[in-house]
Length: 529
Image (cartoon, rainbow, N blue to C red; front, side, top):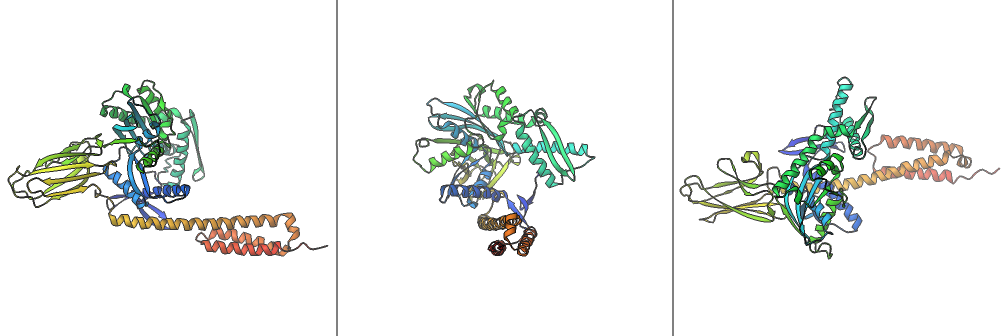
C-alpha cells in the first residue's frame, strides 16, 4: 500500500480509501468501490443489450472468505443488481474451457488462476457436463500488482543509491509514473529478454532510464513465483491426487503469461502442455455468462445440462471454552452442505450460552477469522453436563453461511446468517450508498455533458481561427471584424483554461456567441472592384 496514489485509513474498524473528489475529501469502503465497477459493467451491458439489467452472476477469488463473499453481494446490491450466484473464478474459467468438451470419461483439470490482485488454484472433476470442485487453494494477497510493486521497490532503491539519497516514496505522482512504466516493462519481459524503462522528468528535471533484463526480473520475484507452486502442491494433496492424475492444466489471468511461471509449471508436471484455448483475460467472464444462462433457464443446448459443485475454501467451526476451535465443516467440503455438531454446558446452573463462529485452519480461534456470534438465552438451570446443545452449519451455493443452535430439553434456539460479521455494512449504510451511487451517476452524466460542451466550444474556436487565418477567407472578410473575432477566439481559449468550474450552460452560451460573430463575418461579401 505504500506506493498507492491514495490513502487507506481505519474508519470505524473498516479499511477505507480516502480520495479528493471535486475539491472535497471523500471516504469509500471496499464495497462502494467494488459497486462502482459493477455499476459500470451493468451500464455497459445495458447499452449493448438495449434493455435494463437487474440480475447478475459475480465471480470471486476461490479463496475468498465468508465475509468477503457477503461483502461482494452487498456491492452488487449497491450497484442495483440482484446477485443470483457467486462463482469462484477458477471454476468459471473451467466451465468456459470444458463445456464444449463433453465426455463420459472423468477428467481432472487443474486451473492455475493468477490475475492482478489474487492467486487461486482449483482442481475440478469434469464428467458429462458436471463440474465438481475437488480442492481449492490460493492467496488473496498475491497478484500481478505485487510483482509490479516488487519492481517499483527495487527501482526506488536504485534511484536512492544513484542520486545521493533521493527518495521518491513520498512523491505520489512520480511513483505513479514509475509504476506505470514498470507495468509496461513487466508485460514486455514476457516476450523479450530485456526492455528499457524510461521516464522523462521523473523528479525535477531528471530523466530516468534503466535496462531491465528478464533474468533480473525473475531473480527479483522468484519467491513470489515459488509461492504459487507451493499452493499447487497443497491443492493436489487436498484433492488426494498425484500430479500424474491431472489430465489438463488450464492457465487463467494475465500473470500466467510470465515465462518463468510457465516453466515452473511445466517442470513440475513433467513437460505437460499448458492450455490456453480460452483467452486468459476473458475466460472467467465467459464462464460466468454460461452459468448465468443456466440459472435463468435460457434455452440453449450448450448450458442446459450444466451442473456445478463448489467447495468451501476454509474450515468453519465453533469456539470451545478453552479457546480452541472445533471444526464443523472442513475446508474443501462440497457445497451446498449442512453439518451438525453436539455439545453441552460446562457450568452448573448456566442459563445462557454464547455461540462464536470462526473460519480458518489454526488450532486456536485467536489465530482464525471471527465471523459472528449469537446467544442462547433462558436455558433451564441444571448441573454441569446435563444440558445438551445442537449446532447446525449450513452453507449455500454462493458460500454464505447460516449457523443455528438449539437447547435440546427446552427447545430454546437462535441462529445467525453470517451477514452481520464485524465490519459488515449495515442496511442503513447500504441504502445510503445506493443513494450516493445514484447521485454520483447523475454527477458523472452532468460532467460528461459539461465536458462535451467544452470540447464543442474548443473545436469550434480552432475551426473559426483556422478559417479566418486562411488567405482566401481573409480576402473575403472585413479586416477589422476578422481581427476582432480572432481576438475573441484567443480570449475564449484563455477563458476555457482559466474557468475550470464553468458549467455546460456557460460553454453553450460562449459557443452561441462565437457562432453569431462568425455568421456575421462569413456573410460579409467580398468587395467588388
